[in-house]
Image (cartoon, rainbow, N blue to C red; front, side, top):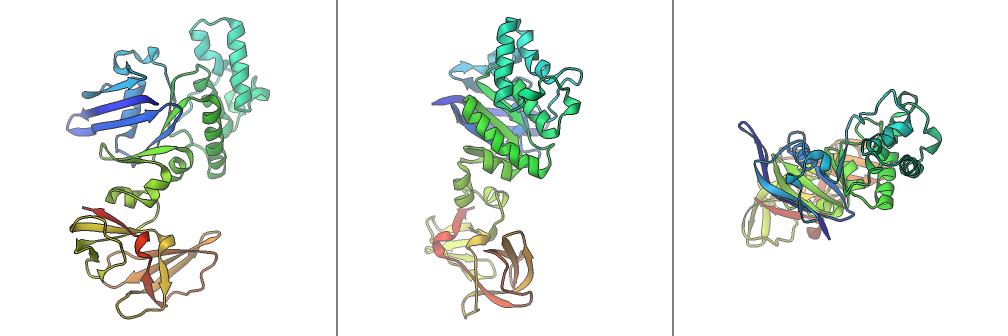
Length: 344
């Protein structure tokens, strides 16, 4: 069931278009990510949902209600800030209780709800500590507890894990996902971190220059990108520009490449993931190149191949340590069904 409908939202700041005709439907109970580079419009969209910005045109409906007509403090929406914005002079419990106290709820109800949410995030033993006495990961949990204790219909998270180191970030990604399923609140997270979006979200909207490029599940975005930007932005990829003629894709300077053409004749790009690339003995008619670098990344080796006539190196990935050395001449190929053709 659709909880949030964003319909044709546009926003300009002077001559700069931050959002251009953005339309997205987000489902009840979904963990949804807005992903894109800096300046793509994702934070502007988040601020519109929170009520800190007003679109120039378009509408936003939450469960059928016009969200834009509601003042920020009256929206069933909560925002978890990137900086956490905890009150340093208050205890953990007081930080979490603050929003409920502002609503003048009964003390007994506040105490019960704060205790319940602190237990969920694993901070019950630290209820009387101050933020300065907590680690970065623990502070992040306090901010999350404060956001969900008010039981919003929609929780917005602005780069929620950016302040954490890599190990703690990985732990908190699992924790966020677990909590989201447990509390049943719809989460919308803004991030520029692909790994974060791919590990957290049920679906992702990839944005660029104020537009939505593609909305899909993480696996679909990775395996079947629909635009050149998505293919280049999501993970490592080998991209060849060229054209389709008579069902055959030919790359500029290389000639025909393995693919199954499913689009009409015309200019196109071919995308092939490094783990799908195979390096073999070179044979006539095959793309050939010279290995220029072999790097080992804890279980996976990346092999860079310089191909004559191509402006960028071809990247291949293989499990374990690679049995190949720089300077080796290799053939570069892949299964036709593994290639993705993207019309230009």
